[in-house]
Image (cartoon, rainbow, N blue to C red; front, side, top):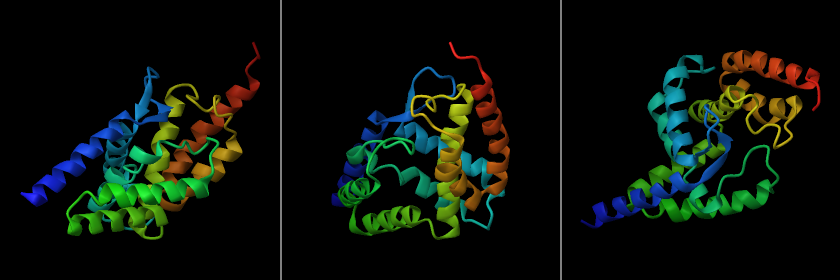
Length: 197
């Protein structure tokens, strides 16, 4: 029973991810998504888009990474890629969160989950590179679907999107970025030529 109790404690803690609001809105624009919704959605993205990975991947491992990658936000909160925060300070907070949250599991699972999370964060294996790419794709699509979504709020530029998002997506799924880039360029062209009110 100790093992089951530990697993249930972890799963109950993971429920808190549903209360972490992200910078990205739902595709219908009605509200901001939560991190639990984001994790589910990018796992689905990975299943659907796996054929576009640059190199062969193990989709089961990718989905596992995506389901756990944001659990640290229970402690650290969401820090939007275009937001104003100190990445080094956030890394310290996220590392401590990973230790605490994965530490709720039985030792064997705690080690396996932490290793998978560390692999995702390092983004050096083919699976992690693709997972990182897909993690960056979904917010772009949501912003495009909502007329720019929160890009104006964060004063996002095309150059920022390329350096902070495009470079990561291109690394793991260049065909997906090429498809998105055309839509992004069209959005920025429309925005810069629109009359100011």
